[in-house]
Image (cartoon, rainbow, N blue to C red; front, side, top):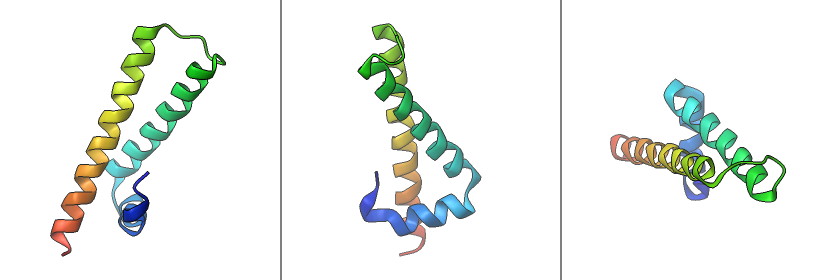
Length: 74
């Protein structure tokens, strides 16, 4: 995730509490979705869909923060 922006991600992870929280939330949801898709963690389709949307929303928010950082430090 965000391989091309790894330096910015590292900076935000170090300096920005909100980015840290989003990063952790995205990671946790990613693992839960993987477990559900493998059948390790039984889950109905509605719950799985909700988790996928939450994961995507966290990623979108992080992408916006990366873009804002890029604009501010260009």
